[in-house]
Length: 130
Image 1 (cartoon, helix red, strand yellow):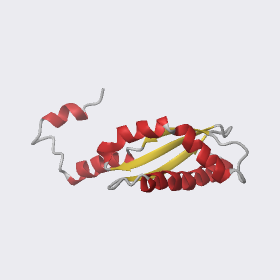
Image 2: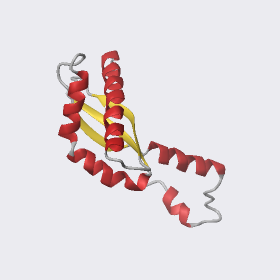
Image 3: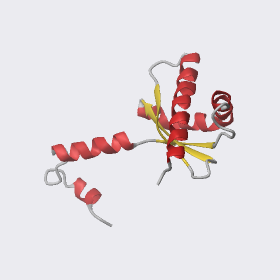
Image 4: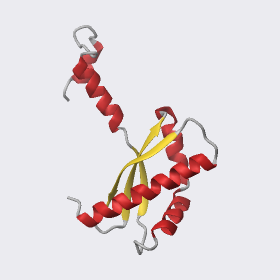
C-alpha cells in the first residue's frame, strides 16, 4: 500500500520524466516516436523508483529501453536539477516497458470473439491452465 508521500513523489517524478524524455526525443529530431511514462512506483524508503514506459511504435521498445537504461545517470542528473527544491535525494531509476495496453487489447479481442478456440484449435493449448 502506497502512502500519500509515495504517491506525490511518484507523480512529481512522472511529470518531470515525461518532460525530460520527450525533450530528448524532440532535441534529437527523432520523428514518429512517442514515449510516455505510464506509472512511477516509489519504494517506502524513497530510494528506488520503478518507471513504467509506454513506447509507440512498440517494435522500437526494446532498443529504446536499452538506450534509456544506458543513459540513466544523465536522466537522473537532469531530474535532480528539476526537483532539487522538493527532494533531498533523487531515487535510483529502474525503467520497464509497460505492456498493459497490449494485455488489454488481447482481452478485448478475446471478449469480442475474435479468438475463437472452436475454429482455431491452436488457441486451446495457449488457454490451458498449467
